[in-house]
Amino acid sequence: MSATLRRLILVRQEQLMSFTKIAASALAIAAVSATAAAARDNVQIAGSSTVLPYASIVAEAFGENFDFPTPVVESGGSSTGLRRFCEGVGENTIDIANSSRSIRSSEIETCAANGVTDIIEVRIGYDGIVFASQIDGPAFTAFEPKDWYLALAAELPVDGAMVANPNMTWADANADLPAVEIAAFIPGTRHGTREVFEEKVILQGCEDSGAMAAMTAMGMDDDAAEEACMAIRADGKSVDIDGDYTETLARIDANANGIGVFGLAFYENNTDKLKVATMGGVAPSTATIASGEYPVSRPLFFYIKKAHIGVIPGLKEYAEFFVSNEIAGPTGPLANYGLVSDPELSAVQAMVANEETM
Image 1 (cartoon, rainbow, N blue to C red):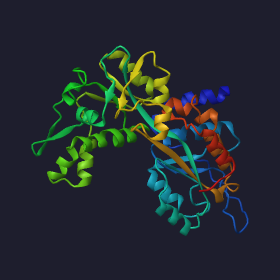
Image 2 (cartoon, helix red, strand yellow):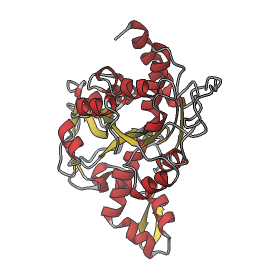
Image 3 (cartoon, rainbow, N blue to C red):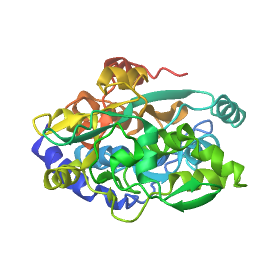
């Protein structure tokens, strides 16, 4: 890895959590044949807020190290990104949609109706988070999602009413857990892994504990119950970390009872300081995350509009750079930020190189 790229990645990771959009270069529109889209001089991307931090790192590194302008990366959510992606072919439509889920058949149909018939699906890796504490600290070795919900929820349903969470220790949430004060350090609301934490741990725990059913029995509609489930207490028992995992590790180092949420790669690089807990009886590993056996995981994607390859400068080059070993491999900068590298990355690389469509 070049010194320039290494320096850029370090700076970008420090600045990433501001989620400031990368500034767009001025569009340079070139005339092309009547059957092709007019060419922009930069790649345009939109979609998943989970994929955003990874795409932002790659986009800025790409702009710094290739003879192409820095791609424009916007958020908006997976569904919004795919909706924009399916609007059609041409310079006024985006080239790539980032997504934290697979594209739906209904979206493929919408794409086709609007002329987007050749789509390349690129799996960039997996969103997988682990729960780790001081190696010599309390025996946090096994969790269920409901343990975290009962420990961190702002309010719980009790006798037909919502009351402030009374649980002060982990043993209050689950008698099998250590009777130590709750001190959880979780992804902040601007962190790329917050969504999987909320959906796969807090919301799942709310359902598993029976709290969601109790809320709907109290008259809440589904949206209100989901919102109440995912509201996190603000009394200091749970602390949002919007920086990188070194900040979470520092909090754990300073609090023997603390437990933090980390990316798998970061934990694996700090096993001399941290021990990891199972979730739902499954130990986290690249294999269990990639297979879906580990419950707090999901694949992440981006989708390329093949009709724009060769028309939009740098589009294919950006995609190949994104999934390169140097960037998306197990020792690359994306793994350091929390992405679990795809065990089948070489196959993904070949698919992008060959422009294989769905």
